[in-house]
Image 1 (cartoon, rainbow, N blue to C red):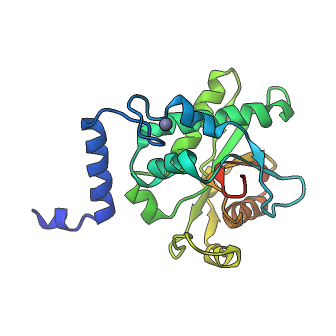
Image 2 (spheres, helix red, strand yellow):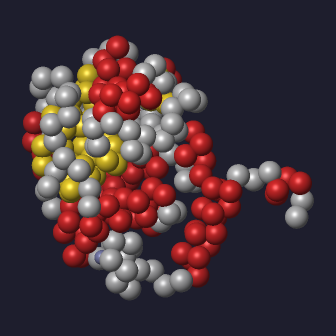
Image 3 (cartoon, rainbow, N blue to C red):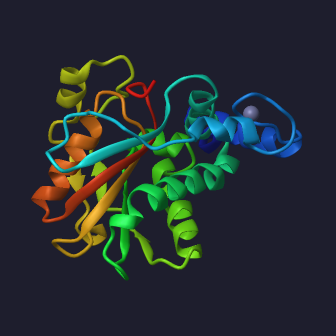
Length: 236
Ligand SMILES: [Zn+2]
């Protein structure tokens, strides 16, 4: 093995191995293992509703999750995020789009552009996952919304600086501390000041991430109108 190959981080090697295995093995549902589609009809049904999630956002900003963080829904999110199942991106993006169109689109001014801002990932995590996983979902979500005749754009407007750690196991206060000053705007990615946006995330756990993102966007002149997440343990 060449010295260059030896320097490749283990996470990337695992990601590539999983992706190769996925190509070789017949597709199966990442939620329950049923052979066939990446997500079977039954597991898709786990994401049946956008339910409100109370997570400390400013008054007037609603957060919604499509499923509780358990069972097949959790397996699907983890498979997509951590196990290299990129074939789930269209499915999960479509589910976000369906929730967006049923919950938020009716309140949008006619003819307005729907701006979607993906929650940022840690750079190291993004590298190990083959790219920013929420940006990929946001693009699929926007494509699906556009397919229904509406204008939808993705604003890659936020980034996480080095120093933010994996938040698994941290309580709300520690999550907020972990993110303090580490969510930054990406000036080139921001929509025009005053533009209302919908923030997309995979899991709302304590709400620390979406609150930090909303605050940074607000300071940059961009209004978070709502938050849409695939899952949340706050939804039963
Ligand atoms: Zn399934």
